[in-house]
Length: 330
Image 1 (cartoon, rainbow, N blue to C red):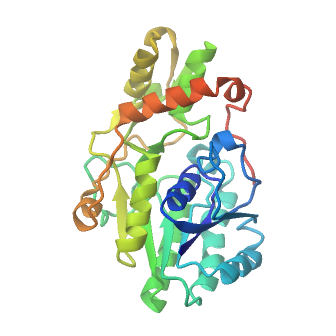
Image 2: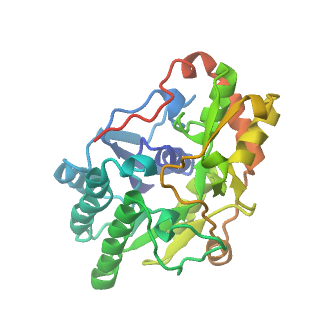
């Protein structure tokens, strides 16, 4: 049985990767700095009892020695790292903490892992924000123009990993995904938050008047693509994960959700000028992974939204009592 260690297994994409790997006969160890979330937020425990999964509560910023001990004991062929400070807006408030997690801890961890002969692949979840604002379908060789502390911190970690590949042959691959969505997502994210606010009768605030454009890719497609890259990708390479559909403005996204739930858009939103320093548009080409690895998406935006609506409505009694805002942890 193949083995994978997933760091950041409590994260949205990390937890879905846990489930994907368990469904495909992997033995999985998960590591996150917080306790496992309630099963409603963990796809691998939502109606399941995983048999080949062990979880360790360890902080990448404080307990790298223990993480290495777990890795040495488990000896995984694949390590995937999703541990990150990921909120763009809050990176302006706490840039030192973003660099600590996204760069310095990555440097310390990877400098130990590069010495391990059992590792055949290290997957790092990067971000398209390293490119800054993009207009065309940019490919993986696009220049870096990070415009936020979050993007700069992620790029710094990526560049260090690439030096390890060049110097030591460290088997790293980089994934950069469009906006990931789906069931079990953090409730403050735009799609679940819109659904919840509509059900609660609360106004949805659209910063920058909702003009920012994003491409949305379903989390199950990202999990599958990540493993395709882990198994078939080339070390040192970057792979974009994006849908075939064009980008959509947040304004139009919320409008679609309102229509699907039979709410009047104009009565459900507040348009706000301020956009908190986020880039206006990300546009990625995923031609490389489609042509070289043979991956393709299976879930459309509308299908994923409908699934999320059903998930929230099915679990409304619990979800309606959960925090709806981002809670920062140092």
